Image 1 (tube, rainbow, N blue to C red):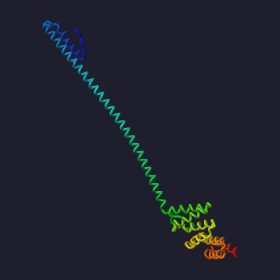
Image 2 (image 1 turned 45 degrees about the vertical axis):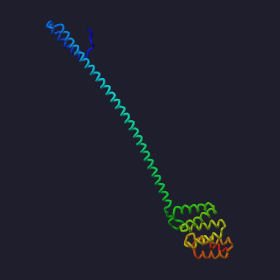
Image 3 (image 1 turned 90 degrees about the horizontal axis):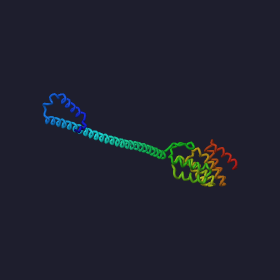
Image 4 (image 1 turned 180 degrees about the horizontal axis):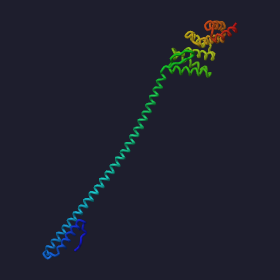
Length: 260
């Protein structure tokens, strides 16, 4: 008879049944051979059933384990996917933060640029030749540029710059000073009559200007250059009467002494 490998529960049941059989050997004669065979067959059927059940249980357990492993693998894949999406979102968030920072920086630069451009159009307080007044930034810039040109010895260019200034800003507080320097540029270019006209405009428009005594002296100098001695003498005498305490009056006295 072939012995089949049994599971642990089956072996235990078989051992129990055999032990019972051996214990009852004294009564074995009471059983017929057919009954013994039936008992053995029933015992084998029970053992086979137990073994089949054990095999089924093991197969089911294996299936459950395989399903559990698949579930764990799917869960791990989902976790990795979520990690990837989280990293992507983190990267997008960091890029968004950089974009916002760049936008704020550009807005700040634009605001500063707008403020600077607005300040260029706002009047500023300036003091020139003892006069304090409000002037646009453009006026201040153009006057200072023309004066820098004069001081660099570029008299024709300074002449053009100051002439343009008084035309463009006729009501500017810079006009008396601009006419004074315009007359000096014309004097340097030997444009004596034009220089006299500008100096006289200064005297008529702002007789109390600190440059007025110098303007009167410059008129006399232009007249001397033009050989208009009588006119020059009268100009110097008027200067002494109008501005007796000025430095120009000292120079006027010296020039009068030479004209006699």
